[in-house]
Amino acid sequence: MAPQRSSKRHSLRADLGAAAVALIAAALLLGCSSKEEVVIPPASAEQVTLINSAQGRALIESPEKVLVIDVRPRGEYMSGHLVGAQSIDAAVPADWEFRTAELDKDIPTVVYCSTAACSENAAAMLLRAGFTRVYDLGGIADWGPEDLSVEPPG
Image (cartoon, rainbow, N blue to C red; front, side, top):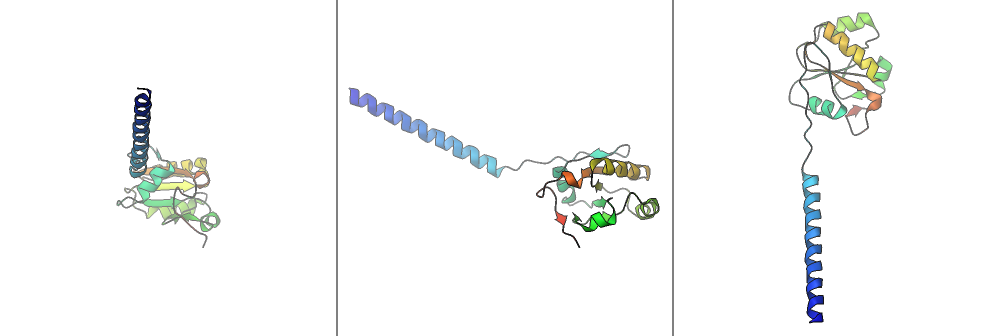
């Protein structure tokens, strides 16, 4: 009888081991195949909507027309900027007022700078200028290389 017990234990261990391997494989497959959905918060005409880099990427890559404004000085813009971003230096009031006056104020507008404080100020300026859907993407220094597509210098 002892050999049968050992055989049953071995069979049970093999079955448990196979089940554990199957569960781990299923978890890995499910984890790799499902992509976490990024939720873009709705914008409001009364306040700036803060977004992170994943939300910024989703918004910029969405089928909806989106205006992206880099408010850093021109030299910083030329050192690398988001693909499709317009350069409007928030620190030059005459240029800022002229350039923002000609833009569509009712489409989603994403603003970023070198730092979050700078982009926050520029986003507030856009609201005061009548923009209705302003998203503050923060500072470019806070993003990782995989977060958003940055055009190289040039």
